[in-house]
Image 1 (tube, rainbow, N blue to C red):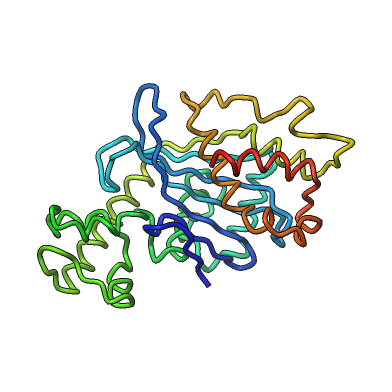
Image 2: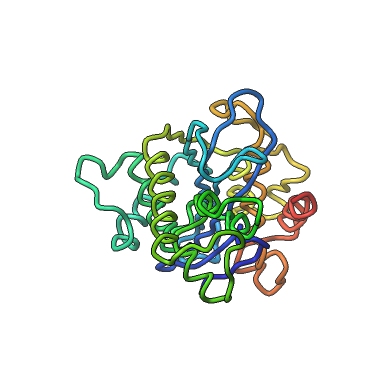
Amino acid sequence: MKDFFDKGLTFVKDTINGLPVFSSREQSGRYGGVEYDEKHYFFIPYYLSEYNFAIHTMRCLPVGVPDVNTLPKRRVFHFPNNHSENELKEYMHGSAKEIVCESNENELNTLETLANDIDALDKKLTYGMLAVGGIAAVFNPLVGAGIAVKALLPGFASIVNKFGLRPAGKKLSQLKLDKDVKEAQDSITNDFEHSNTLRVINPILQELELALRTNEEEHDPLVDPNLAVGSIPEIEHDRWRQLTEKAICHVYKEAFYNAKLHQKARLGPEDIRWLNTMFLIK
């Protein structure tokens, strides 16, 4: 059962073959130089999952930039340690085998193929929502319908039918709408498949992993030297920090607010205090 939280369908979650998978669309004004259209893949330690981790994919655009754009594309994997990538690959090529893209033997271990496979899983989760969040554009009468649909996700027609919505402005036939949306989706997917792919060790995820496997006496993330204050040299600006904290809040929302889940999630009182700082600023 898909669970939509945010207004505008900018956040969705599901469990796919036992793995909690989250997806969201974000905007950031934190660009020091080149602006990117980025897709982030967060590997988040999470003991309420049978695999002990969750995946959060996140499309991040500069403020005001539409889903279909000419910005350089980039994909970034965020891991808490050097072993997480193999864990993720094992899941993708095992439990999610029927979802992922067809890959030849020479490509099974490449980071690019892993990203393509997760995007395939993303599509199953979100009706093909790589361009998540653009639905509102079609209801703006100032935007030509033929342009507006370029910002929409495949499956939009079914959402229109489900909620009885109709675009303002031009009336589009069902066939034309589906065609334009698919073209936009294919264009975005192709752009990302040919983009640079980075692999980084994320200090905040490092800290989360340490916090979950220690108790209050061993390590308090608010008092002891904190890995989360580190940087990611491969990323030229600190927007990764805000995005990481938002991803953790999405994943831990249920466990954070439900004290009955704290023990199973391995959340001690010191971990709750640390997470609370994220929820306060999210």
